[in-house]
Image 1 (cartoon, rainbow, N blue to C red):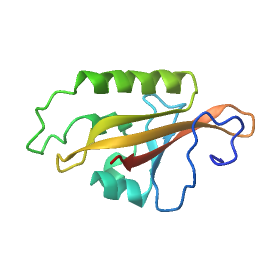
Image 2 (spheres, one colour):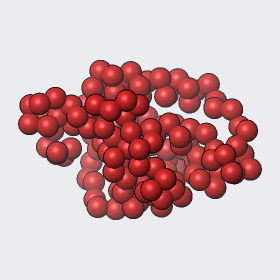
Image 3 (spheres, rainbow, N blue to C red):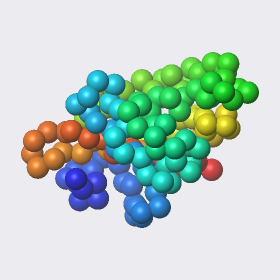
Image 4 (tube, rainbow, N blue to C red):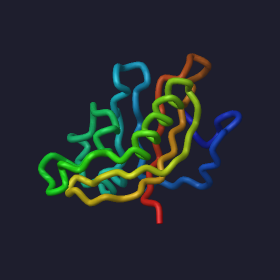
Length: 136
């Protein structure tokens, strides 16, 4: 699975190092669950790997139920961003956008999300790699 040498990239991701916050989601399972989360992803979000594996990344769109901000509604612009991400994944298209996410402690941050569906040896798109970073 190679993100850097993919043919016809639609999003320029620049240089990616081992310290990047990333997840790998399974596009063939219902709700595209996370099957891998890097340590940097766990540091960025405050969740452990055990807490995120098997979940859809959508859980970052609302504060954790135990946080003080758990009753905050999801803003309309973030619902539109979520819809754009969903449509890109359905079409196996790359996308990069900013979205408001929440850490486990309820801290709100602007997340620059890049999603890249990855084709495996001509057998179709089985996984999507998500690169995440706090936008300044």
